[in-house]
Length: 200
Image (cartoon, rainbow, N blue to C red):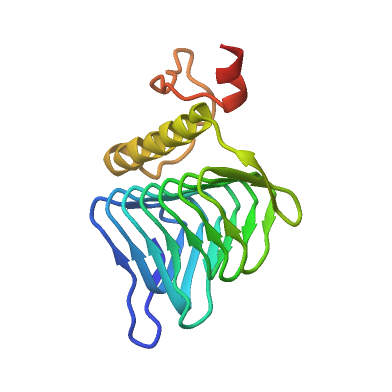
C-alpha cells in the first residue's frame, strides 16, 4: 500500500489488518486489529489523527480526513460504506455509515446507528444510538429494529472474514484473455441486502 510519513509521523497498521495496495495512508493513521481498508480509500492523517478500532472496515473510495486536535475515529466494528466521506467526526461502536454518505466536523454517530446512503450529516450533529438518519441534511427518521441491528452486525462480520480472505488469498495477477470453460464461482457467503432478507 502507498504509505507516507509526514513531519516524521508514520502510519500504523496492525499485522492482522488488511489494507488494499491501492489505498493511501498518510501520517497519523492508526489501523487496528482485524480492520479492512478497501481499494482506493484515502486516509489522510496530515492534519489530525485517524483511528480505525478493532474490526472496523473502510470500503473502497472512502475518504477520511480531519482538522488538527480533532481525531477522526471509527470505533470497534464500525462499518463505512463505499465512497463515504468522514471529516473530523466519530463513528461509535457498531455504527454504519452508508454508501456515499458524508459525515462532517464534530458530528457523532451513536452506537449501532445507521446513516443512510447519500445522507449528509452536518457539522456537530449527534446521531442517537440505534437510530436511522437519512436525507440532506440528515434527520433522524426512527429507531432501528432488532432485525436491522442484527443485519448490520452480520455485514460487518462478513467484512472481518474478508480481511482474513484478503490476507490469505488476494494477489495481483494478469487478467485472462477469455473466460475458462469451467470457470469457478467464489465460495458462497451468507450475506444478503436487507431488502432480500425481508422477502424471506
